Image (tube, rainbow, N blue to C red; front, side, top):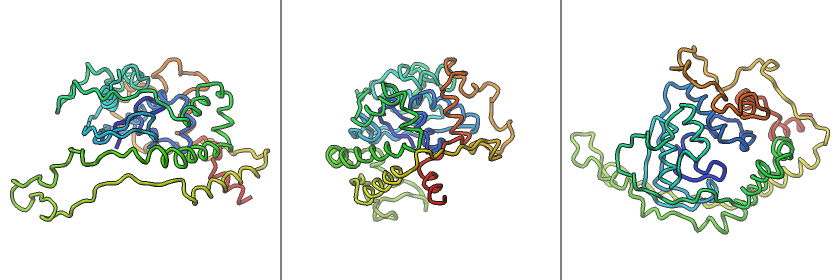
Length: 334
């Protein structure tokens, strides 16, 4: 379920970005430099696979600031739902105080006809939220995200392949854990807890159905349902176990021979089809003739190199370099 929050790479994150973690391989960080285009390509893929996509976005507690890992939590008591992934993200962006069409992935999806990104074209039903403006911060960064952007979009761009797409990549995981779990959460984030006493959504559920009929009536605590404990945010520092794992990982890489060549696998060699392509006849995808082709949402991307098409195709077709876990297995076995 997507949640209402900001994001250091996409400004806001919602239903469309859910596919980034759900459909892509562990090497999805390869596409961070072109993440807006990637999200649009993923929506095209979803529409080719599924006859319908429905999203519910949880905004009971939302996040402002450099999300998703360093947010300021706010109780906003909002719930959104739509079968249009672009429209629900556009509405969420507007609630945060952003112009949806100035957010690149929403604009690209809107222009490609994948959904409605213009608030003027979205029909809202339910509570009147036309005057809601959460005034969230749009482009905040942490020390860690500033460093990442230097690699993705700044002077370190020529080193992106070496730093983030080679056997050296565990350094970035270790650095992120050290910053977020070792410094940020213990010293900054631990005090940023939302007051769950302010949450109104669902507060009436224990009494729901008191006027119902027959055996189907819902009852509150003590009358058929046990009282559910309130959720608590997990409190966890970097911990000795994680510190030892990071140290072991760095030690293993330090002794790895410089000549070690990562293995590649192609569909022709493996004989495998892309993992996410469903084994259904083409007719299962409605309106497939009218669907934008993969990567066609932005003419600048078609045929370009490097491009979102190449990055996402590599991920979808499992054309990957050997990652940390596989590389360790290769070294252990050989």
